Image 1 (cartoon, rainbow, N blue to C red):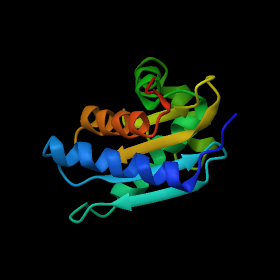
Image 2: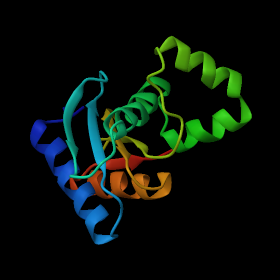
Image 3: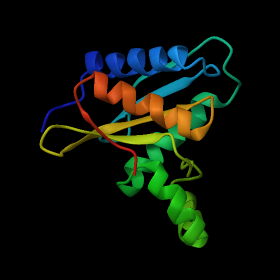
Image 4: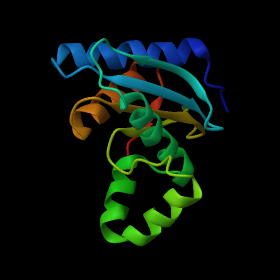
Length: 143
């Protein structure tokens, strides 16, 4: 398994933000977490609202906590709200169960970490996360 380097995390952020600018999205916050759930890199564009960073982190952290992209967590929350609520209690409210949290996988499918983005619609946040992961040469798993 490859480690997620700071250089790769920065590449993910740069490409994700570039995608947001290309699509003329609202200002984005991007959190890149390593496989342990520790913040590897973070950036927020000028004009993001107060809690966008925490939301971005929560999308990525939730993906790592459950081993699935946050799109799958969102679907599961609709089907099993009590389960997602219980997991969120276990992680002290750090899980944000909506699209925009994407797992980062290496070429062999090994888990490297996750990206969480917040600032625009959940679908647009997710698209930017995938663009960032792709630009760094990894595989994205949005769920």
